Length: 214
Image 1 (spheres, one colour):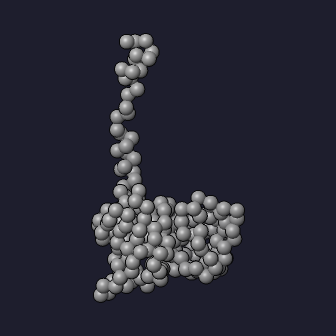
Image 2 (tube, helix red, strand yellow):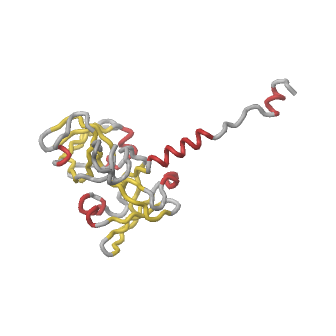
Image 3 (tube, helix red, strand yellow):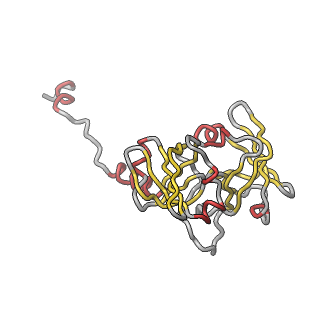
């Protein structure tokens, strides 16, 4: 579990590609202070397991499904990534509940300055928009942000200077892909509602007729 408050920007040292998945070696500092093999580190919002640790870097396995669903498929040597260690019990919860399970990638469509803030417009698959609501929370490349407005297939967030400095979001360009994780509470609520709906009965007049009861 993560909060969406990025601890530092890491640098990808190398990508070892497999047939569909692979391994990524990432340079960092703060996230390495107490890291152990088996720990989870959010990398651009993707929960990845540490499999090897060195003094200035850590290595993670990336499965094929992660490659398909995230922008890590585009990662290369020198790429910057947002890093956050898993939430520690007793820490302040400053963002929102982020699982590190990316729903899909979105595409940056506009970057607009307004005084000290920057508006970022992101286009996503329309099927995700039911989970994205105005004044709700969304994780973009692992960064917890508040949704300012929505449309049929896009939403906007406003980024303050501190967030811009401590994440990679304002280094992005138009049409760049970013990882999107919708608020998990919305998905759980939807599932509970769908599961509680009465199932349609198969006992119809046609069924009774076909089986000789009419």
